[in-house]
Length: 160
Image 1 (cartoon, rainbow, N blue to C red):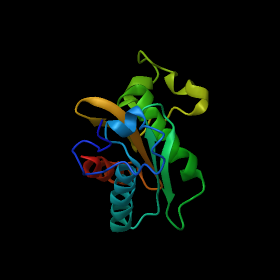
Image 2: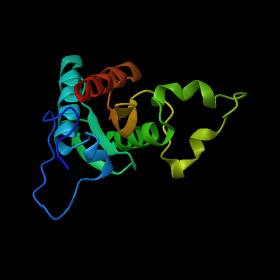
Image 3: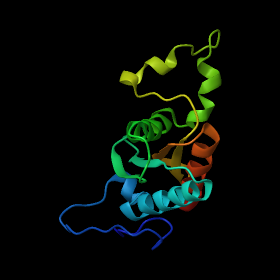
Image 4: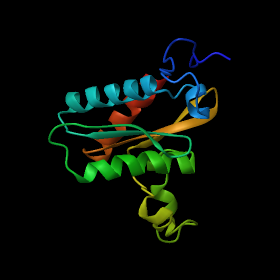
């Protein structure tokens, strides 16, 4: 079994313990190197937009793979970035797409109250897929909805 990510060699698994195999997310391409590439792209977009952000990458089980907070990013962005990534994974959709579904009178009104308060229903969270398979999610917080979405879109593009 190859420990290379898909596409081969792009984001190789940095396995320092040969006795442990990769997780399903790692085998499918969400390695630490891939997560760092996502964060680097989001941070670059944050700098371009002149907004301090936090970025979180989670695996397919919603567990944190990597996190980074820019200097001057508000403390609240720490939890929001992680929760946006988690929400994108557990719902298999961009967090921005949840907003219209939870409005009064909509079929899922009140849905944001589930998930022990972690469910985020505004822009900034995106699922990460490789070859049509959900492997994780990324979340960005710190700017406006549009700025967070632009940064998270950059992260998804970097993941490929």
